[in-house]
Image (tube, rainbow, N blue to C red):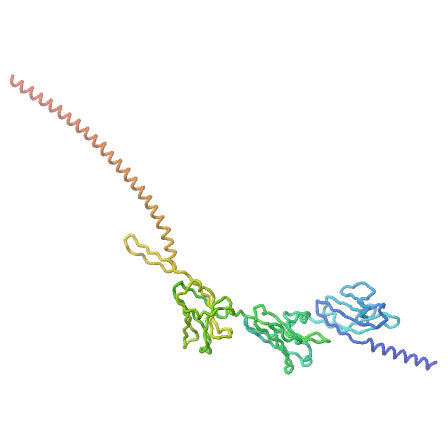
Length: 432
């Protein structure tokens, strides 16, 4: 009887040990702060209808977080796929406090079935330090991302931004597909680093990048890169103006080492599609051997010559080996010759003020003439009226004088008659 009891005990122990070995598999779950994580646990056939749950620490009754037979609790939810015999617990809104050890449990008579779970929670941002890179629009750039020797066989990738939780899903390129559009990835296992190259840079390529290395049973590891892309067209530029029918000279810089290179000039808003202008006979190139520039002379420029010009000494269009010139073309200014009343010429205004002066004279002269004409007319009328009044006055005065003279003459003649009569009377008296 004792022997039977011992055999039974050994059998039970073996069964328990085999059970523990089968169910004590470690499940790794990885998540990031602020996001959700799914913890999936499988169970043997025959337990499809049994209750499943997730618990923490010692898995006492107070440690049970959620059960398939109960409602959703706070940040925890659970589903049971009985066909696959896998139940999944979702923990949302992860924080660093959620990291640690969990247990997947299946309720049964006697001791429950358990599977251990290790949850790691990482920050959803990276990194405190980053590598700085700088390049120019339309050129290329390469940057290297180091990794540990144990990660040589692991997947490498790169993404934009600083969000680690979605970096792999939004990867621009991976080591499984090392050529993707303008992006190229090469893995140098000898130096334990992979290099990412970006060709034909555009301004929108500027920003933050993450180099990622996938780790199957741990959180991925990252290194950060910050890329600055400068505008290619604004490294060296100038503005120039000219006048229709007159010549203009464009100055183009080049580095000393390009003294023997073929020089060129083209016209167009975009450098890549500009038109070579040396086929135009009006354009001629003159090199200055002692200086790091050459001249382009344009004779008798036209209105349609207005636009953007590119000149340089490097057919590869490397930055700083070119000059961008914005040429504006104006029509000749009209000039006006104004003569003073005494016949002398006034001081001529500056070229820029000739047109304005001409316009002001053109407006002012007619106005002044009108006022002068009105004033002259008014003066003539007033003088005429004055003279008329004076003439009339003289005529009246003359008539008055004539009347007075006639009266005086008449008085004198009467007096003479009387005097003669008196004299005749005296003579007669004396005679008597």
